[in-house]
Length: 434
Image: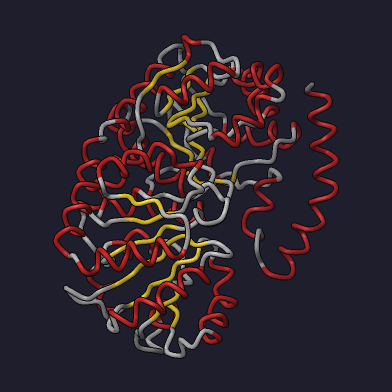
């Protein structure tokens, strides 16, 4: 099976590599990450010989949010640890460098044995910790052969991924059992890991660490400078459409246009999931008649003043922008993308609307819906009706938002449990002293 997997991987690499090289040369995308993914990493990670050496991996922004409070809690247990943080995406890397205190930051290598061995020779980790579920067969097998302990934290398997893994469960059973421990967010995910063949004694149900990170960030308070830049004052009506995907902005703009009939002072802040789409989205805004729309980057450069519509074309501002919202729509949910992190808005006490496609956030959606702070809609008409109802009833809007925020607070505490799990795995075998 590993031979077949590597043949398929080689075929995919031959097909895909020219595309990524061309994109890197022509647009600059992947330019920062491609070299490191191929194993060309500077010697920084071996500059110190502190032990234990703990490598945390977070694929992108969402996983960074989960791993950040775990790393902070782990520091309290083992302050002498040397921590390396990797991401797969460039946006994730940028957010990780801004929010996580680590000794080194790298990009995760491609699942090619030659590349993996080169990176492991440089990093020399004692333990590898991956957030959520990022399974790469060659990497896990080589780590197991080298005696590098591996742990999954905030583990979860979406229904979509579960269906895919089940087709070759005999293979993934081997991959999963290379891990020393798997901490999962709920019993439902524990059951999925069991059905894929993971040994029961390796599973721990510890909760969702994302709640811890969100609550701590809220305690720091909103960014008043950002509010001033966007010209948002107390009591202003602001609709924030966050993490939107292709096909969702049109729905949001239609809803917003209708809302302006009854609420002419309502503002719209549009935050696409992928900021490289910003130029095309600005053209759509112009075509839709929103001629006073501006980008956040232009406001950062003092080239414009905030208009009725602001398009966010910079990374890392969405969480703070949610603090300015009256109501929130969270994207990736009206189109089949699995949803985005609805907890970020809820942590600020904002009612959040989202579509039917929430496969990656089923537990979060269920919890928010039970609390009243999350509202699932089927399309534009339901979104329009829901927003209009809550704009007309501020008391209800505030009450539902607070209920959602209390749900976030009530689920805190998982990060320390995951940190304890990692500490216990580190303690299972002596750490060599250099």
